[in-house]
Image (cartoon, rainbow, N blue to C red; front, side, top):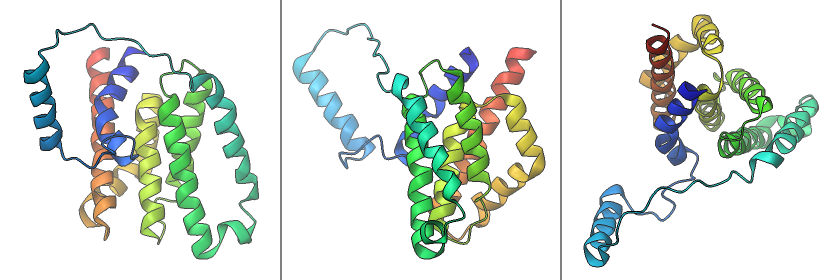
Length: 201
């Protein structure tokens, strides 16, 4: 609905940076801003109306994401999931699902909302992993899913340890990236809940 789309837009820039989908040129914000300003002064191009781009990934995303979720049936296979190799595999598995779901988020399929809830719960099950890379990928997945799941889903998880974990992680996690991302997830949840409560008032 409109509130979901609004929160997705609000979170997009920060989340794109975490998913490595934005700013891949290596330029910092000031350099990009200066370059854009210089180009504007040089060319003086007239402003054009924004264009709408069709999400071509959306129609195929549901089956692709479902296929990856189906791979979880192998979770008892220690040759895949156990030890350092398993930690690396799980890290990349969660990141891949996050990127795919993020890229498909504008496609109007109810299945994507279901996948978002499933991915959030999957990520939550690894929130206290000993490996910081796994914790980071779990937080990334949760950040991706926050604006795609119903408010009631967020409230339920927040009252069952999510809020306290995010507060603790953002302040005390030994990994700086995890602290930053936990703060992002907590802020996104506050934004979603606040906007929804305002619209319902």
